[in-house]
Length: 282
Image (cartoon, rainbow, N blue to C red; front, side):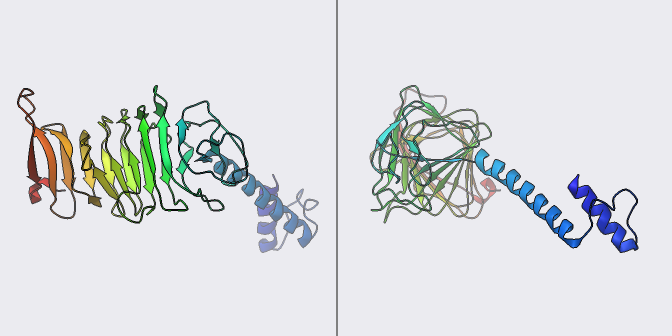
């Protein structure tokens, strides 16, 4: 109502007169200023509601009561343990799987955990939020997630990986990622997947990001399309023909995959380099 009154009064001033019935609403420039302040306050309330809908939850290691900092180290990941805190370490809550929430492993703007650690997912699995961040730790050690399955959020999950480690991967997910939606990878750090991943919505790698499948001791697998605008590193992955379709958008890429023909599961797997030719790119 105040906004409508303000617009009518301003229009009337431009026309050299004030509409009848609205003159008592604004009798001075001070009244206009008060109306503007009310509009700004209303906008702030709306902004606060948006921020709360995108609440951030920080993994707090084994700490289940607030102590004013984000604590490092390993711990469990389930829906009941109160080892999740806010940016200042002044709260303790169970994990919130709401899609709009941001799940953070590592530093906030005001607190940095001393170390990373191993995060053990509940055997029954966990529903991921729409955004999962891996941020800095005090000693550049990383978080490794293992245990139960991780189900991709409705609409997909974005992994934002900071350049945490001095060398090598900046975050490791050994748990299997499952679900009907896809994942996206962002950030300067490398995300390493070492599980048997069956999420069906495909994989997007930003031009700013790196994704690695498998390492010297683990063979990872994914299914579906991979849209690679960034760095898809040397792979050790289970590759089944017709199940994995790769799109390299900027340059050729050689994949190191454990290969078994789709129709012959009795033959032993063998290593094979697969070269993506220009016609396979989009």
